[in-house]
Length: 347
Ligand SMILES: Nc1ncnc2c1ncn2[C@@H]1O[C@H](COP(=O)(O)OP(=O)(O)OP(=O)(O)O)[C@@H](O)[C@H]1O
Ligand SMILES: [Mg+2]
Figure 1: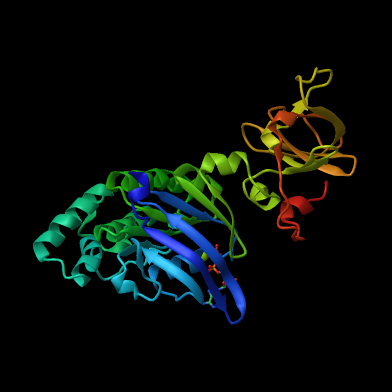
Figure 2 (figure 1 turned 45 degrees about the horizontal axis):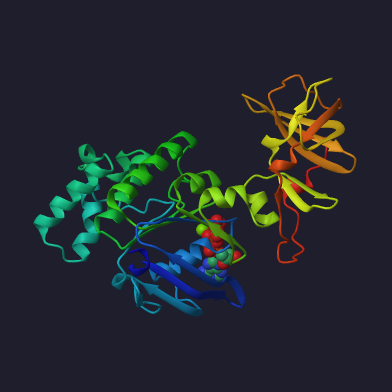
């Protein structure tokens, strides 16, 4: 029964200060067994600090950490059953792949015969059994990251912490490794917390997405829910919503550039929504489509179009399907500095 299982990780009002400045601000977080949670947010928002507190490398300034239901706030790292994978692979250069993977098991006093079996199993799991005798420098980045993953999984951790494990890999490999990571997590039933800047990675992998801003959780929920209904402008911008409007009688709304239609001359707009007229300010070629920036009065709007004949300086009509508009709450009434996206000036 669901409510009877103990969450693997519970953070209660966890706060961490560094010489007076607050990096993590009273975070409450519950991670259920077998769940893949993604911690997402801009640089410096407290993601790594949160993981380091869960792992026991950094004591919280205040708050409580429960692991498998037990008080663990002051427990040293070696007494927490936690596996970690970092952005840098952090492998021992002088040890072979299999010795790297065996390391944590040896430290835990696992008998030699069992170490052999488990190392064999996890190398099989990540598809590296044939490279067991190599040294890290004889491996590609993706292979090294698989060794790091195998090493973390080998100890059968109650939770696997992943701090931007894919960000050092090139774009193609990153997408491939995402699938790999998901498969390993599903096959082993592991509980995982993944830190990432990359919204796509979080959308694809996570059962639960937690968005942080300046040390606070600003929204959490299943990826579909958060993506379709970002609560604040901050979350919306982070997830690639680019149009922010304050419509009379509707309040602040946001709409994705993919949903804004660029109407051909004379084209009848689809029913529903509003049509606005403006001028193309910039067109960015993206391969299968173009990203169009247009000025409408003193507003800047963003659309994606397949019309490759659009040119800067020409008039344009845009269709805003209001059925796609997402109403926004304020960002805690906060005057937030504009991001580069908002500041962009028409070319
Ligand atoms: N050891 C430290 N001493 C002082 N300040 C620190 C320390 N570690 C982190 N901070 C500060 O705490 C804040 C959060 O840092 P953290 O490393 O958790 O961010 P992050 O979300 O992981 O960022 P990134 O995406 O760049 O890795 C930052 O302002 C950072 O400068
Ligand atoms: Mg970090």
